[in-house]
Amino acid sequence: MLNEPVNINGGLYAMPADSGPMAYFYDKDVFDKAGISEPPATWDEFYEDAKKIRATGSYITSDSGDAGLFNAMMWAMGGHAYKLNDDKLTINITKDKGAQRFMDLWQKMRDEDLIDVHTKTWTDDWMKSLGDGSIASLISGAWMANNLLQGVPQATGKFRVALLPTIDGTPINGEYGGSGLAIAKKIPDGKLDAAKKFVEYVTTNDEGIDARVSNGSFPATTKTLNQKDFLAKTTLRNTDGSDNEFFGGQKYNEVFSQAAKDVAGKWEFLPFEPYTRSVYNDNMGLFFSGKTDLKTAAAKWQIALRNYAADQGFSIVSR
Image (cartoon, rainbow, N blue to C red):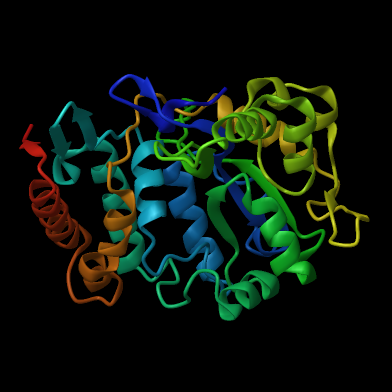
C-alpha cells in the first residue's frame, strides 16, 4: 500500500484510499501535426517539443498558478523541500534541487511563450482548449483519466498517456493528489466500530477497492496495481456504464502502474497543506502575470510559509 503521504514523524495517521502517481497526458493528433512521433522522455525533450508545438499555434501545456503542480513537480525532479521532525520544520524551497530544476525549466518556457499561463485550470475554457488541441498535453495524476473523459469527450481517441518526462532518463516520479481516510479523535459514542469497518472496507477490502476503481479512482494498493485485469484495461466507463476507448485502445493502466512504481520516497507535505496552497498565488501569481521571475516569487512564498509555521508554534530549521 502506498502510505508515504499519510506518515507523520514515523506514524501512520490515515489509510490511503486513492493515489495520484503523475503521468503525461498528450494529444497525439497535435503531436503528429508538429512532427513529434513519441512523447518526451526527458525534460530537455519536453522543452524542444514545446517549441515545435508552439509553431503549430498550440501550447504544449498550461499553468496559471497551481501549488499542487509545483509541489508535485518538485517531488518528481528529486526534491524534498519540507521536513518535519517533532516540532522542527524545514521549509527550503529556494535551495531545494528539485524546486530549482522545475523553476529553471518553467522560467525558460514562460520567457519563450511556450506554456499557456492565462487559461485557468478546471474552467470551461481549459476543457475547451484541451478538446480543440490549443493545449496539447497536461501533467497530472493518474486519476485525471476519467476527468478527461467527462470534461473533454470531444477528444475521445485523440489522447494517449505516457510516463512523466525525467531529468536524464532515470525513472523517477512524484504524486499529484490522492486521498486517505482517517477517524477523528473525538467520535460519537458507539460510532467507532462502524467507522473502523468503513475505513477497512474502502481501503483494504477487494470489493470496496474495486467499487472505487471502477468509478474512476486510482488505487493505492500494490495488489490492485499488479492485477492482470487492471493492467489489461483499454476502456474507461461512461456515465451510462458503457465502455469508451478514450485513449485509442491503449492499455493505459500499464503506464500508470509503472508510474506508481517510479514514485520517489521520502517526500513530505507541510502539516498545513491547505494554507500552503491558499497563499500560493498571492506570491507566485506575480510570476504568471509577468511581474517578476519565478525564483523571486518562490522566495516570497517561502517567507509566507515560514512566518505561518512560526505562528503555529513550529521551530523553523534552515539548511
